[in-house]
Length: 172
Image (cartoon, rainbow, N blue to C red; front, side, top):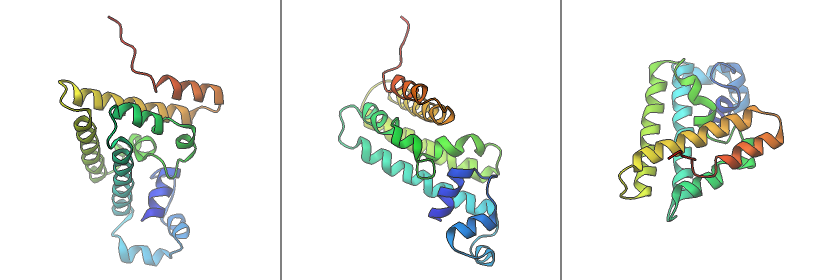
């Protein structure tokens, strides 16, 4: 399952087939059909695993921090995270594909996003806009990681990561 999770993050749901997934896992195609009804079932389980891993990493990163968003940004928006696509954030690699997949996959993302937002909002404490701040921070970080991975210019990549580690600029 872990291998499938990594392979989907590397190549996307439609970018890798059963034969390649099984080869990467050291299994045969016949073994796949003994464990899964179809590729979509594997996609859901592998994605759920990746999203649970995301949750655990985020929870570990913010635990006991006075500024959980700053702690997340420092870890999440790093060159190391940019370069670890297969082991990195499943939101940044797979969320844009979820709406083109079967509804079960969207349900998997829905549960994970809700859980992640609720946990971050709780970590922000008793503030009137903690849920909004959690959604904004999560969206900004994921978007920044996607953009940083999309560009080849190291200076621009650094600029994207650095700019998004700062609080959002607002006009008054």
